[in-house]
Length: 136
Figure 1 (cartoon, one colour):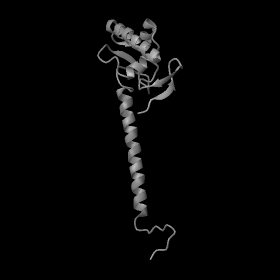
Figure 2 (cartoon, helix red, strand yellow):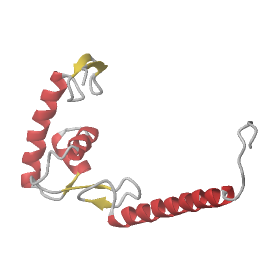
Figure 3 (cartoon, one colour):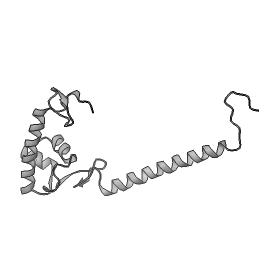
Figure 4 (cartoon, one colour):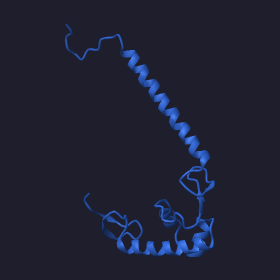
């Protein structure tokens, strides 16, 4: 995998991305933020992202990025909103209800696509398709 030059999503500085996704300075800051947030969670389990932000000063965007990266697993629970309905959850991107609804929607789409595919295959059976060439 080739390293690419990018702009840091946090500070905008140009850096060579080696897989961390941000420059070394911002990466160090984020590691310090992780220590602060973990310490806060130890004393305040079940806190929301907003509460963590208000009491530590760590940006909500940064907390969510660290949360999605799995940096707080086993260090206290964090409540954050489901990306679909906003209900407070403790893990994943969606609450159970939204996850089930999304699975059902995906299944419906797959079924519809399979039906269309079968209908198209059945329509072509028994007829000779010509590609502009003479058939013998």
